[in-house]
Length: 251
Image (cartoon, rainbow, N blue to C red; front, side, top):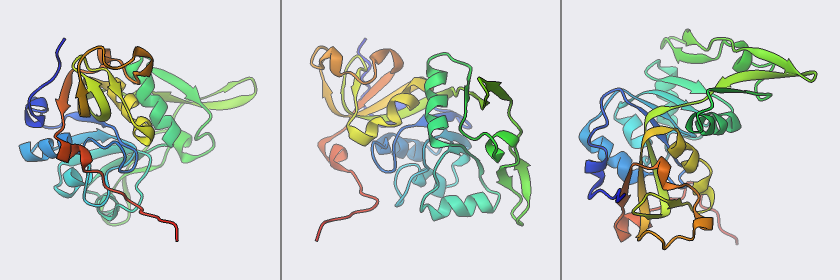
């Protein structure tokens, strides 16, 4: 039951070339930067990443993106990541952009064993009708476009069929975790981390505070340890390393 591994490098040692990854984080909140750094150090390439966004300010998944290690991204937000936009428009990166709520539910559904579900999000747009550019040809043309999806009517309302997401691995960051893999997330870090953890066949969690089993009130657990395979305890320095994308202060 003790799922703690000594180092982040040991935790990601079996992630192969071309693996699919669900990665937690919401902007720069709750990003498993230490595990991402370990993947970068290993030199793994050809990764297919599922995440709300693909890093920013040269941190998070932006580290792997800038090094050309990511082949495909399924996400909902590009933001101010200029390298992401450059690779996408140059045809170097395949990108599936989907509504943010749909992405969250696709991850949750995959983790819950639900193969597909219907949602009204995207009906009447290219999300449902197809034609969204997944890959450009580098000259402004579309090399690969999204296919049309099934649309069905329920009680007079149209819904589009979306499929659950399962990935080979998942990388997440928690504020607190115990040796059995039970995790607690802090505020916005809870938005996508539990869902990404559910979707991974092998889920690896970096935790800012490691506690012993029983120290977390069962009612306070955000993600039960059944979804987590490995736990990496961060050093105090690593736990404090939290970047702010848009710093705003009152006058």
